[in-house]
Image (cartoon, rainbow, N blue to C red; front, side, top):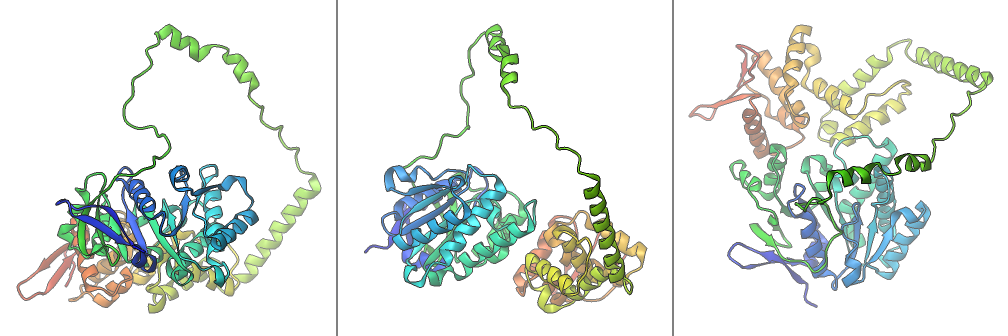
Length: 481
């Protein structure tokens, strides 16, 4: 059976093919800003391989439901089933090798995430005798594998990250080949993105996304600008299932359409102003009267319930006080963060893994009290890892004031540079810088310094002997080499 499909063509007209057998073993990551043609690319891939392999599409916007019209995909409305039914459907899908589209557009965002997480987990947990090969396509993957905690509940975030990590890291042995598509690489969890070996990078404009895309494609920093210049429908492709070198491919046409969208220009209504006003105001009072009134206010709780809640609050306050007799809760939290930040093993973990390690440590030490959220933890972790707590207050405040202009993902390595600059050290410890950045690649460190210099956050000078000097604007007269 032929295992190759044509995804599009190079500039010179040569066809660009996908080896589907290789794709099943190596997975795929697609990036592109809104309007770059990312959904069109996924649709082309699904249509061309529909007769070769089972397909499961996680569709948060309902863009792929039209696949059922021509290729027989079963559309599952996520809003119509209970969690237990969703899991049962996933098990039957694996058993009967059905190609399906899980349409989630009828759910709120957090419900979409929980539904998709339970569905993917059930696919992953299917019995061994049902481990048939299948493509699992996740559109808008930054929703289901966020790089940082957002507005969703913590248990939801853990559930979806676990499901997506299992899909991309361990799914191959179970026959599941993950294909994830995202608008921004910076918003996608690194553990999920790192497991893909094939890449299709579309147009993106932010420097941090271009740098990550160029890094994945093995391109030099000066070539990253090429990603910004890509036209709609063009992607840079690389991977064992596509090509051993980056190639620019224009994605071919598709056979099915997506749902009607509001886009482009269309003629305005030609009604006269008085007719339009009549359309807007006719029977307005009657329509307002038909609106379902809000539910009546709930009665005030009885006095006994209020008294009981006050007693519970007092009891919790006593517990906090007793737990902090030897050390204030906030000081204990800061001490744990400092200890973790100076642990080489924890420093190389992803931000989400670091945060989970921190929460586990707090629970183990029975710390009761408000915990910092993900953003506050990352900032405290970066400050502790750079050793700013050993500086005097004025210097620390000055460095943190300059740090307000530093991107969140680059804060930790920049603080290491600023700390070395303040100390007047003759050399920046590259191992410490790499640990703060979470990498062991000298190339990534070099690109990091280039990026910080372009942002005006550092000044890099290199003499003919190869000695590099890094200065931090704002820390007058202090430099680190």
